[in-house]
Each structure stands twice: as C-alpha cells, then as structure tokens.
Image (cartoon, rainbow, N blue to C red; front, top):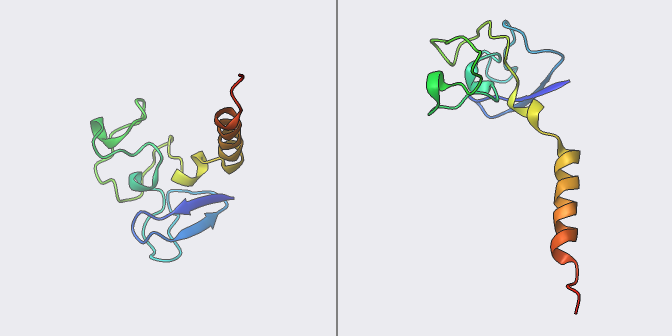
Length: 97
C-alpha cells in the first residue's frame, strides 16, 4: 500500500497504486500531481528535483510523469528509529576518565 498525504486537504489515504486517474478520497483532487510528489520543490528549476522529469505546466493537475513518488513513500520509520537509537547511544555514552 502507498500512503499519501494530500497537498490540498492534508488528509492521509492509502492506495494500491497511484495512477494518473487516482484521486484523493477526501477532497477528490488529483492524487498524481506534482504537489504530491517527493521531488516537488517550489524554488527549484521547473519546481522539480528530478533532473530527467519533463516539465509539467500545472503542478496541481494529474500528469504522466514516470518519476512520481508519493511523499509518504520516501519515509522509512524503522530506519529513522534505528538512526535515532544509534545517535542516542553515541551521545549518551560515558566518556573515559
């Protein structure tokens, strides 16, 4: 399952796949839109950090971009928890006398 937090309404939804015709079940706006992608960045060239992606005119409308990744798909809570645990161990270790 792919988790998506909608740019427009802020609600979380689960999808088997996010296709060009997918919509947010809460506000019915396009789900596969640049504003819902992990590569979207307003102040970047073409507002996209993926250098191979084609320019998309309307960032809030559905498109055919092959590089689309939901913002939620890049997060890995287990990896984050492991990293935090390692940092806590590192900084809480006693210094040798």
